[in-house]
Image (cartoon, rainbow, N blue to C red):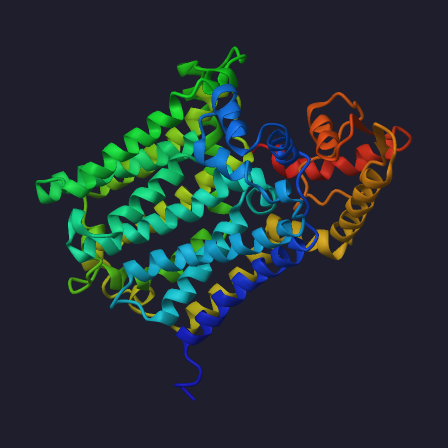
Length: 492
């Protein structure tokens, strides 16, 4: 009986169940996903007019230096009229996100954590991160957001895992993993300025730690830093950056940005701490951290650094990521950027937890909570996770969009809109406004003004001169649109 049912096995299925709880509605919603009116059609229409390479140069010179982002959005499935791909890529992204967490945990926990334990930890981390996302739609279902932010989240997890695998080989610059690291750095930095800051900060901190504890910086790390600098130069020297960042009187105001960052962060991270499952899962992670910091663990050196140095880097990076958005455009961080901040928050939190477990290891060695899992702990955690899942905003949002039929109705209305665009013989088409806008899928609808940018992109993509919403249902539509924008624009 004891071998069939143990606390460890119950926790394994509990964490797998938590992952399934958040993943199931995401997969089901994917079947109702469509290209977003926001940006997706504009990139595709640009390619239709200028071709793939000229379009990328156009955006590089006139809007943004995000070369990897530009490549992804200008090779989107819309170019080939492959609408069903918008069902596939959210599911693939979800799978890659879990695989990224698993890769990182597997490299850290080799010879310390069992495969079942690694699967459970990766599932718990994936559950936690998804439940804390600032915007489900912008992370999973918006192709343009995926290109600039979501995909790089996954690539960062893989990069961290590759770093550990490379370090364990002790082959330094001769390892083929160095080439993989260079490719990952190239793609991550080219996704956005935010990711450039994350990557350069981590590589710089890694070199600093190596210098402090090994009295040298390996050639491979120096080469990767130089490579990252070149990638960053290619991103920031683009002429389009000045155009995109200009026009806001509060941009590049240091004092304003610093004050607003402190005000925003004090509320935002407090909510992230108290209104999520991170404290509950931290209690479950304590025995894992205790094993990772054992003197015989090969992972112990990764956590054997000055606690104040690690904490300073962690808090400093969170501050800088939030500060830079205020400094660049003078407004609070948008949801897609906060999705990135949340990944740094989650990964850094559990790293710091492990560092503190190593620091106080001799004092807590007799604590039952850190030496193993017991039935009372499992029971309390199961209840608390159930309550947290029931109260979670993202879970309620995704399940409600499915249960209410909004997602299905949105899908049907989009199919009817495609049919209307194809069958209409006029140059300017008036389409009915969407009466169902599920917030977990949709950012916004077309405008009532045919000259609006997104309307122009939509019309051009379907070989029309113009498109606009019919005005008869304006009042009814307004009440439907508001829920879709609430998750994207709300501030803590």
